Image (cartoon, rainbow, N blue to C red; front, side, top):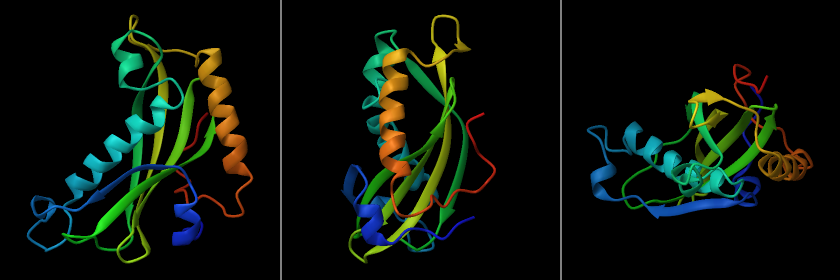
Length: 165
């Protein structure tokens, strides 16, 4: 696993959401509960996927859709009630039917990378409920984003367990 990017490098990526951490996000340990990380990552994923034509409205209309099939979460620093967090994304790679992404949760209040979520999403035909190749327009958008992200001066801190095959 490579070294995580700096806070500044993360903040240069597309921001998908920014939130104040409310009191009900805390757990008995006094920091943000793991289910809340996933809540934020889920919202960020829908936003990211919408940019490629794979959002909630696309799926609801029967157009292109994707489904998550694998996750790897790293908790790097605590997040507390009252902190401001922002989620960013880097597209790592893709195949004809899968996209590998890295979501990065930055703690804006403390200036650190708090967590990462590595995902593998599959392109699906919702009518058949089967994996299918990405539509051409989706593939073009993904490829354009991958080209931008591959040019970044830092390596994605991926687990090595997930990849688009």
